[in-house]
Length: 404
Image (cartoon, rainbow, N blue to C red; front, side):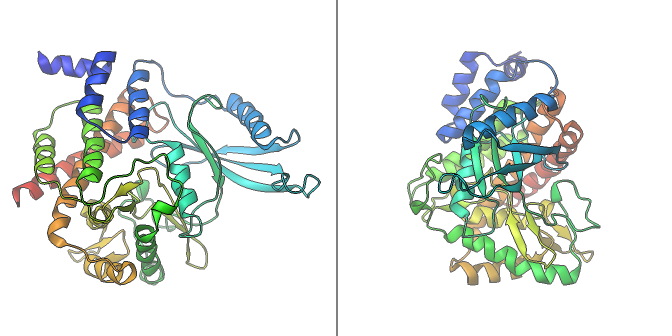
C-alpha cells in the first residue's frame, strides 16, 4: 500500500510530497528550481507539441526586442534531428551585430541555433547555467558563442538559449549510433582526434573557474564532501521523483555512495557528459566544438575520468578491449590526461566515481521511461531506447558493488 501511494505521488505530486523530496535530497539552488518546476507541471496532460508557426512569430518578436532592431529578420527556421534532451532549431538572423557601437554599420546574416526545453526532459537542466559555462569556456576550449539566454518560459513557452551554429561532424558517416554511444572512428581519424579530445578535457579541468561568472552555480567548499553531496543528491532525487518501479541495486548503491563519499580537495569544472557524440570536428579533423554542457557542475575531475572509462559509453575494439569514447584505451587516456593537466589520478578514489557513474545512468534511464510514458517529449522512441540502457547500467552497478 505504501509503495502504491509512492507511485501515485510520483505521477501526481502533491505540494506536500514535493516539499518532502526537496527536504530529503538537497541539491544546488538552480537545480532545485528546475526539478521543482518539473514536478509542479507534471500533472499537466497532453503530448508535448511545439506549435511551429507560433514559435517563429514569438522568436521574431524576441529577437527584435533583445536587439532593439525593428528591422532584424529571422528566416529559415528548421528543426534539427538528434539530441536526446532538448528541442533544437536553426535559423538565419540578419541584423547589425555591432549596432551598439555603430548604428549605421553593415548588416550581416548569421546562422544560429536555438536550444529549448521540452515539456519534460530526460535530464532537467538550467539554461542560464549552460549559457554561463559556455561563456566561461569561450577562448579556453572550442565552444559555440552564446548570444542570448532566457531561463524562464515567458518568451517562447519554454526556457532556451541562442548560440552560434557551427558546421562540423558529430558522427562519422558510418556512425549511426544513438546519442553517440559506441561510436566508431576509423584508425586515421582516431589518431587525429584523440589527443585533442583528452587535451580539451584537461583544459576544462584546469580553468580558473573562480575568475568566471558562474553565479548560477553553488560553490562547494574545498576539502569537504559538499560537491559530491550535491551531485549524488541530484541523481538520488531524480531517481526518487521519476522511477516507475523500485530497484534494490539502486537503493544499495545510494547507501554505499553516501557511506563512502570522498572529499573533494580541488574542485574543478566537471563537464558531466564528456564523451563521443558530444564533440564536433571539422573537415581538417580538428575538434571545433565541445557540446552539451548542461550537466556541468563544480566537483572532482575524477568524475569525468570515470565517465570516460565506463564500458557502456565506450567502443569495443573487437578484441575484448574498449576504447574510451572510441578514441583511446584507458591506460593511454590516463597517461595523456595526467601529462596535459598536471593532475594525478587516484585509482582507489576512482572506484567511488565508477559506481556513481552507473548510478547516474540508472537515474537517467528511469526519467527516460517516465517522460516517454507520459508523452512529455518529442523523442519518445529514443527515450524508450535510453530507458532500456538502464537495465544494462544497473547490471554493471551490481557487479561493481559485488566486487567491493
